Amino acid sequence: DTAVSQTPKYLVTQMGNDKSIKCEQNLGHDTMYWYKQDSKKFLKIMFSYNNKELIINETVPNRFSPKSPDKAHLNLHINSLELGDSAVYFCASSQDRGRYNEQFFGPGTRLTVL
Amino acid sequence: AQKVTQAQTEISVVEKEDVTLDCVYETRDTTYYLFWYKQPPSGELVFLIRRNSFDEQNEISGRYSWNFQKSTSSFNFTITASQVVDSAVYFCALSEAFFYGGATNKLIFGTGTLLAVQP
Image (cartoon, rainbow over the protein chains, first blue to last red):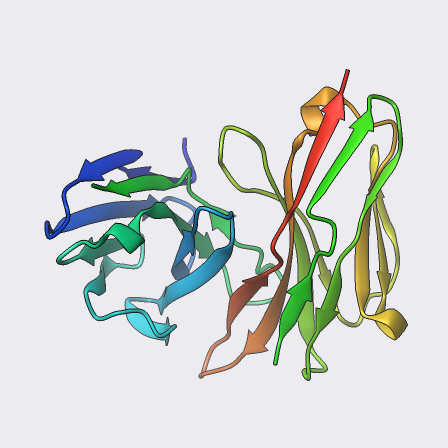
């Protein structure tokens, strides 16, 4: 009964490879997000989708491409991985209709680029 | 620009001490939301509280309490009688009410405060 799930939990890969991280939420929320947490624990939003529509794109390199096949899923594809992409990536979701707009986070995917 | 400042990088206390984590925010918006999240050593982010800009009442939940003061743009978090299980990084976050036809929000996080509770 996991609310927001991400796969994989750990991802180790070589520079230059392409990889994807998957996210699913079973909360019935309209909006999903990707955040990046760097080695100093700083959390920054990357993307936000509402009902499969891209709403927020925060100056992320275009090597990062989010894809939302339906409102319960938001995947993150990264091309040509670089050392600086090593981080923990968190998916989140929120119900943005009305007052209840706290974001619920997935467990995170730790990406290590060698 | 919207900004959240958590000036305390690390705090170390002994179990049963009270501890307050500071959060100061900047925003031009009149409608906004403030949050606290906990990130324990296991790494997940756990939602603790949400407060909207029109509600300045303080809140208490068990050993946790929050003091929201618009006059000083602060949203401080106090843990009473701290326990080892409270050891975590705590993030304060600010959300703009962002309207495009519906509403969404973008969380702007502070840099976090690492709380270490020693037995």
